[in-house]
Amino acid sequence: MTSLYSIGYNLYNMSNETKKEAAKRQYRRLKGEVLEHYSCFKEGKLTPGSPQKPYCASCGEDDLNALCLRHDSSEGTIDRKELGWGQKFFYNLQARGYPEGFQVLCANCALKRHKSL
Ligand SMILES: [Zn+2]
Image (tube, rainbow, N blue to C red):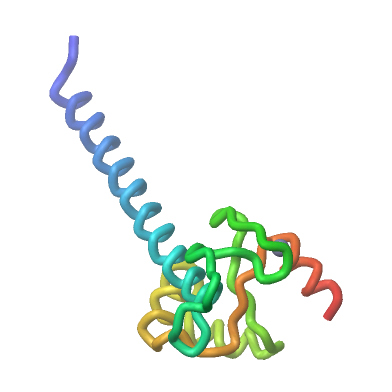
């Protein structure tokens, strides 16, 4: 027999799951927009011949899950304190009009670059 308690519990769980999925979609959309900008735009204009989707500047990997945004300089820790992490980081980059000094790399190329510095 189904009790009201179990119905409420299931709805609560479904609601939370829906919220998580919505948050994931929003994060992916925001990350995709920001990485696309840094991959495909130079000085606010679409780069000719650009694939119009984010890709690694070093090897060309285009899996959004494997891509990250790296600082061109070693001043990353200063900017990270100002810009935050995760979704907040991407949101702040958009809000500031995509400041210069960032590069899209895949996790492997970012690690290789970090080890070579
Ligand atoms: Zn790469």
